[in-house]
Image (cartoon, rainbow, N blue to C red; front, top):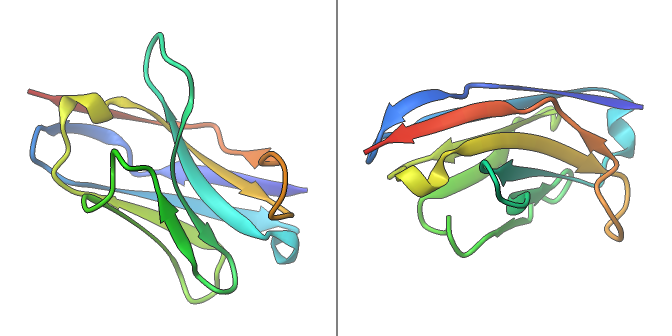
Length: 119
């Protein structure tokens, strides 16, 4: 099992920045990649960004490219999401996720952290 705990959410004005963290514990050696998803009220959960655990290859949703940066620490068990130039459309609960294979769904999820951007 892998446990994921997010932190760093909060309230920010449009144009501001926040940095989210996701700490992984448990069977972290089994992780293939980690990702951020978000879900706004009344909307479906959407992919934000992902990073492979060992090679550090990244991928972003078009809506956040150039504004958000995903990274991981040297120990490869903490993932970050630096969010710049935030706008009200970025308001959502942000979830950290991990999976043990490059195929299929994400196996493990954090509890989520709220990000609220005001105009």
